[in-house]
Length: 432
Image (tube, rainbow, N blue to C red; front, side):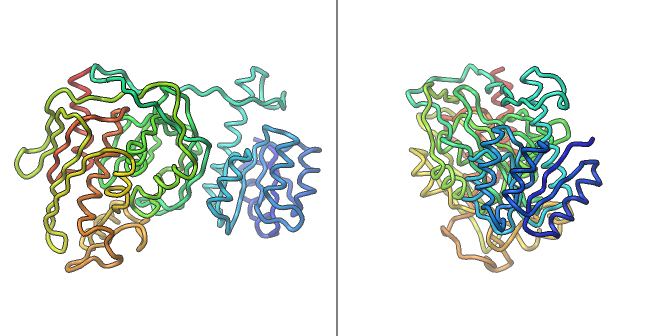
């Protein structure tokens, strides 16, 4: 391993630290504090990957990115910033940056980003059929194919169009259960593709499908080939409600928790823009009654209906008590008003156990509801019955793992992610 990495940053400490990290991993490095000199070095030495800071003393980082991309449209550039915004991240990705890292940089995240960039670069060379990496500088975009969700007898074409997003975009935040900084890139996909995830930096692909689900403790986790993506349900809930049927999500380990609800995802999708596609949506129409649970204290039922709806009965000790909500889905706006703002919640009495399991370490005072013995400790509720509304939010997200929008009536009592997944497996088993 002797690939050349160009590091461009106005802080000498960053140049030294990154050079040491990458040198320990067997990479060669060249450094500069100048955007203008970076372009000269790129032209002369053609590095394999570029680390580029947003703030430079001469050229702006985005200006430098544009200059490098003009010189080489396939340049592998990883942008860095210690005080950037999501707007900056989005703009850099749209301009062609391969990745965007927030400072302070961790060892694993730095090395992972380089390896991911090199892997993508190698894929371009191989896709072009031009031999090994050392023999060619020509690069083309890799052709990536994704299997659509499995066809089922329950599918019915509608008069609604399939939908994706207008442009690629980036969302950064904390992982609720990992506690680490995480980020994801969302990209449009063509019709009849479905929702797919790619893990970073290894590039393991997995569909948003119940067949990928491995864990359901406190969140829904997808797993394949030793890689996992945690807490997918809030994002999928927003996608289900918005009618996004085709999307690629590249993510580092766990979906950002944002504020603990689906509202941030919904707003981000609206900001990026959603695009109707030239193919009809296929809806999964429930054909009979399916049920899991003991039928008494705990049960989850889904049965035929003309529209999609979810009723949930929740019962906890005070200060929550018993809550019931009946949500009839009419459009994305009804979801936005009634369900999307409802945040995830946890109990003070459970925190020790959750932490011992390695979960919940990303919980902050602004991204979930913390419930004490007598009251909510850290926030004002958005709804008096916010807890039961969040349970409905989770069901809407988990049910999108069937691969298609659902038409049927869901009635739930005291259930969770495990039950949501179990009933989907029952539906698939009965119709495979």
